[in-house]
Length: 337
Ligand SMILES: Nc1ncnc2c1ncn2[C@@H]1O[C@H](COP(=O)(O)OP(=O)(O)O)[C@@H](O)[C@H]1O
Ligand SMILES: [Mg+2]
Image (cartoon, rainbow, N blue to C red; front, side, top):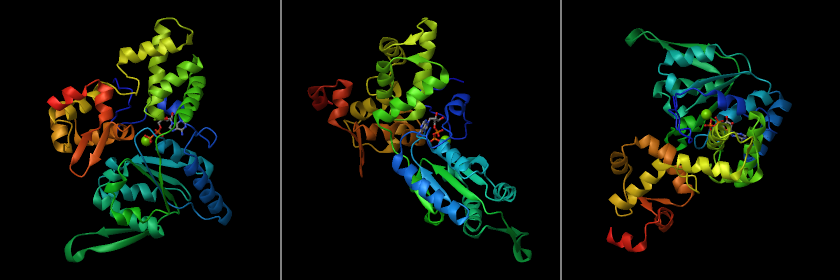
């Protein structure tokens, strides 16, 4: 299946092999996010010293910023194995119960997309997180009894792109919460150099910085563009990737100087041309561009907001003057719309 460079995948989709081979395994390989790394190193160091299990951790941030990678680095750092699952796949209380009872002492349970957990499954987690106990209701009606099962001391690491929708009782049960933010140009270049080395790609510094500039400050996007650029270079028999080779790929893929792709521009244009620049509600926008609301919220909007092309107001999204400029829509046209 073809996936676009944004890594626009459904949350339940498994990781592809590119993600796995390029995934950082140690603190040294995990580039950027220094503040998060430093705080985590202290928390982990202290837990090790006290011989306590590591506290439950909540990681949030956009897709492709390194949540899954970070969970794996943490597990490796505390010398534990990691069991990974997605919130969407834990439908029944029984699913979560069997997962928990099968954990080993000290193991890390990584629940990705935790905002998709069913309410009952989430509530089952509460007592498990709090005192490593599982409370199950057996039977129905007046005959119902609760059964208590002791669990091994595990560490839950949960990840989400949507921290705001998590119920407070769930959020409050984490010892620490970390936000992964967009990377800077320097971080992106370092990530690209590392990925090129792993993929055995020879690439010039100008090509690295050209890709970094268009990678939406997101490592997964950078790696996907790098792979596409490599494909082009291979087909054209360029042993070394130059800036020109990279630029050719961008124009073929219709990635502009800011890393926007046709779908991003379609959304911006819709706000400008169909809604007079906004404000427009998410429902109306979603209907017009025929994209699911979740996709707009999780995939397109964060970067448009980050770049200042789009603004979110209480009344809806508005396109900024920067968006008009970027799309080459003049002020005059703007007033006519
Ligand atoms: N801090 C980082 N340093 C180096 N590479 C990274 C980093 N964060 C992410 N990556 C790369 O991006 C890919 C996607 O990261 P991932 O952890 O799957 O993101 P998320 O789980 O937040 O969607 C990884 O496979 C890895 O190649
Ligand atoms: Mg992930």
